[in-house]
Image: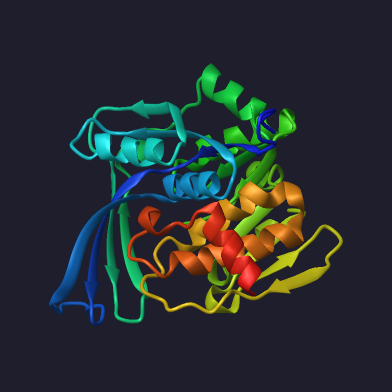
Length: 292
């Protein structure tokens, strides 16, 4: 915790992308061309989104990741600094930054293609990266970086008593030496169905269920459900990242509190277009929780 504010110190090891977002009445089927209604370029990536979400929800956040040396890099870096996320461990590598192409239909549902770019070259953690992880209260990771890097970070966090929160997305089988070091897993229902065998030894498992809210399973097997506030959905892109960041930022208050705040944050994120641009502030989340 920071001495000045009591806020948790969170290190996010993750991806950062430029999101190319197109809205359409409906998403095309293979071989079909449809007319788009709106196009925006918005900084995103699961790691960056979750870092911004955690910072806006009240945590103090430091980002570990990589951008390229292309035209997107400056704006991607600025997206983090504008949200007060520390970027001293954000490195620049030769080549393009990560890019995601996103199609959003009238119902707010999306289809996404991610090209890793610089994210794929986050293959090593240096001494300063490891020191940052060791000094943090929470290490928050996803699977848009090389899994060996995530596994090494989780092992180092466990050795230094840093809580490991993993959002195993995009879903893939988890190495045993990764799952063994995870304290909290946060994933959607489809990912949970796919990865359930890998999560049996993870003490805290949170499953997001869209408009239905989320469920939580604790170390003793106790299950808890939390509903989401009712909102008018515009774009579901990044809602899971807003949920995960808010959960990590409030985890020190206990799973019940964190689940409540995370559901509110995830719901609010669906009311605006884009991912990082739609992430709510601590005040907005508090107002939504109070209104329930």
